[in-house]
Length: 543
Image 1 (cartoon, helix red, strand yellow):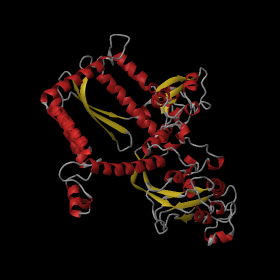
Image 2: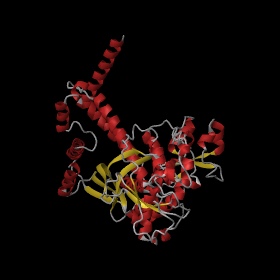
Image 3: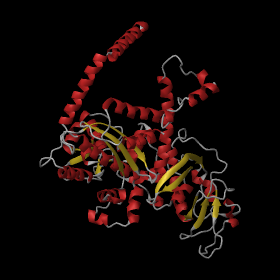
Image 4: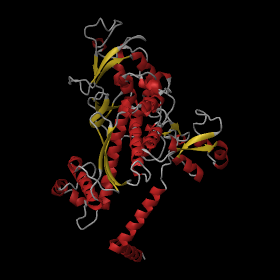
């Protein structure tokens, strides 16, 4: 019976393959696809007040880009653009939804006078279809309130009280002060007891100590250097050791308050009496809490994020069963921006990259077809693995083989559709976009300002807003260039009947950290182009 089913399936696949390979069927299918695209373009005509001159399109464009991701979905808590949210009435949701409390999770925090609430498209469709909404705050994704003992902690104070110490090489980029991650994330387990017992035995509320945090004590270079407040650390530790993410039976044994001498061997070497820091000639404490510890893979380490960023998760474990990418996307798009710090974004990026590489490796092996199948015996052969690497078959993402395929795709488009008409480069200028500074002020500082006030901001304030919410910067740049592309592709757009028929684009990040888009456009009307510029850009993309 099973063989008959397999034979019938192979027969159907063969018939589909023969039909697809028939040139006449291909031509008919291409004509149908062209007709569908033409009808879609005709239905997507932008309405203008006048005859559709350039001034009208300019006004439409600036009217659209004034809207940023500031609308809050009360179900998932995400920040969305105005065209991405839908209004639903409270009575409609309460009558037709058995779990209305989960759908209206933020109703108390963001009340509505008319009873209509904002929902993103995903949450709205799930409510209408009465399906379970997995990415919602009621599904274990809501961040708990930050207690007073954890508020105001500096970065190095956070690192000293966390059970995991993620070593990352973060370097500044450009004049705007954006950041670059170099190398991998090294996840080191540390003992909070050892850190506490290494602090001085005696201090008061106003006492500060200069801490030099190193990977190893023998190194001369410091990983972090800053002043800490021991009283602030002793205040936060009793709360954290009793949280679910620690799960430390001996956590209550961590000393708090003033440390007795028996818990601090050699304390006289680091003892800083109540003497002002400015008076001391050599006043510092050098520690390496991760020295001698074996790094743990961030994929295999359970609750690694909760243990590394407890000021974000406040010691609570995430209970959502969705995929990691969906959870991270929900956290970085949420209305409270505590998960958008630079170390947290780099940590999530590296962990997601490792998960994608791990999953892609398995998928590639399963999808391999042909006589030369890859087996476990082949992978144990060192010559076979070296042959894969030599022929670029061992790389799948951001590799020479990938960019070789992209180059062939662009050249194939020129060969099939003809020479392009335009080559356009679009770069981000966040500090010069006044309307975007208004949006950042609302998302970062929760403050509504006018464009005149945004235009009067100092350079340092503008850079601070950009560094504080890089996720919104990337989303707004993507939205802005899509609005331009929409005008290009429209049947009644700025090119009138010579609308864009085909295009090839590439988005990359500049040395200063901001995005940049390269487009090759072809219109329905052929014109003179500079082939030298286009091919130079294509060669640069492929190398």
